[in-house]
Length: 385
Image (tube, rainbow, N blue to C red):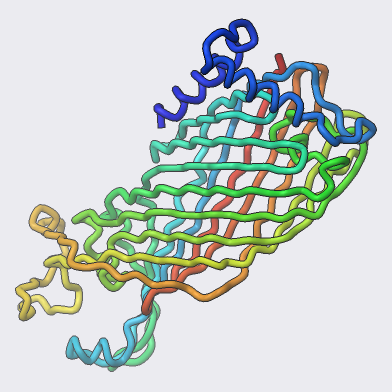
């Protein structure tokens, strides 16, 4: 990630230098890019609705809050229970909902083309990298997030010979760190780029003077990797029917509407909503085996040599975990939604902005159903120069 930041800062420096020295072809090329960005920022816009600031550079200090709710439900039905010599049906659910992550960082950009980086203040050691590019009629955004947590809740319900039951698990202290890496790319095309500015709401490289809205086309690519595969997570992996690592990939397209409301001078409120059609949905699960088996009695040993796990912590040093295979499934067409909102107040060269976004995904692989909700809120103080 540091490599991306270095490349971005180098590019920014080169853009500055290109205005002064145009002798070498790399600098001439960068100067041409700079000229294109400058001209595209004003091309085709109505100055009665959109104003482009004279100062092209902007830097922001950001305060960011992230939250994620991942729920995985697994059902062990009659046939699977019978294979274990048991009667009944079991339903397992793991609720992976870490505490809201708070991070601080910075963003620097030139007329809507910029890079951002933030670091978590939470013990999850999270990191966020972002890239954005906006013009009069389009917007492109890439967000990469990584963190780890051990905040998992698990519960079980179903029935056996004695009847129905509902028993929550109280073993959250045994969970080891779970690593999560997520990347979201989205792009938009605005039909009313002449009077509506997406940049005014989300990177402040322009200023919306009068209220306007626009229909928009969008596409989104989402991928995440969730890794539970640690020996101390053997119980959790067994609850999830042997799944110790998951990779989700989802591509979608949609059409929606965005509106910039200017209730008073210098104040802008934006709401964007876009239903998305998921056209590509791929889930890959990696299966693991361990010597942890909660279905065996104290004196039992399975044909594979698995042994009962004692109630104390003595098992933690002896647990084994091994990846055995993987399963890949492709989902059907489905609907999703991309929703976001923003509030901006512009001073002379300073500006304040708060914006948020929420996404929801739903995947299924065999008897496991995975539901993921991810949202974040950014609060920024910016300065143009």
